[in-house]
Amino acid sequence: MNWRRLLLIYNTEAGRTQLAAKLDGLFKQLYGMGFALTVCPVGADRDAQALLREEGEKYDAAVCIGGDGTLHHTLNALLSLEKPPLLGYLPAGSTNDFAASLGLSGDLDEGCRRIARWQPRALDAGLFGGEAFCYVAAFGIFTKVSYSAPREMKNLLGHFAYVLEGVRTLDLFSSWRARVEVNGEVLEGDFWYGSVSNATSVGGFAFPAANAVQLDDGKFEVLLVKKPSNAAELADLALRLAKQDFTGPHLRLFHAERARFQFEKPVAWTLDGEFGGEVQCADVRVQPCAVRLLA
Image (tube, rainbow, N blue to C red):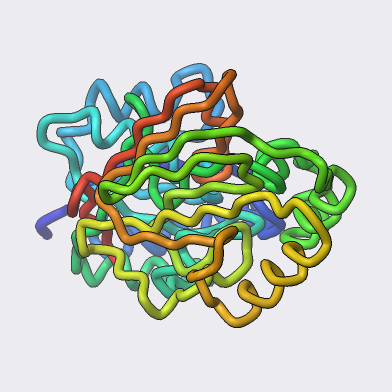
């Protein structure tokens, strides 16, 4: 048998799937499909991402099992290699936005069959400073929820935990003053939210104009929401959001290869639901077809 070598990275703390109880069956299934497995848990003394960076080129594919955060760290390790192996993903998190955009099933048996079909698909990735991201870099209201909601709550309630945490921390008086350069246009003002994404779902919610999103076109979607200054402007913004009308003064959507954000002081960002650090200047770019995913 011509064995394919898999580095299998798993996070038993992700989501509500009781993954630990399913791992033995999953390992046997992949072994029976002709894969030679090296198994590495997230958070072990010998970290999975460190192993991937040091020995990743020995493998035909690196398959991660977990949520968007597990995928985020695996992607960064892969892209540090000169000749990275293929990427496999078995979603087992609380929200799994990246999987939703690709239509990947959360059923592990189906996921194993997908890996075994061995049909890689090229996808764009993002670059935020020196860090890669799979599907979204964002700042503003609600974005802190993705990494601040307690893990116990996320594992118990799933996506609803993000909604609860978002409502608890929502502050409509907050805003972030920024200068944004995108597609040769400059926008300045107080923003409620800004994101650079490659997804049809962000935070478990359908992305505006999701039917226009292409995951391999060399462009991401840049969504900017300015803070309304009065009730009338807020009502207009809400109406335009409902209609997905991006022509108003407070709501803009661009398809772009790059966006640059300049703030008055450091601002916290989230990358694929993980804390991305606080930066005063963010240069966000697309890496066309940088990922080869077994989809």
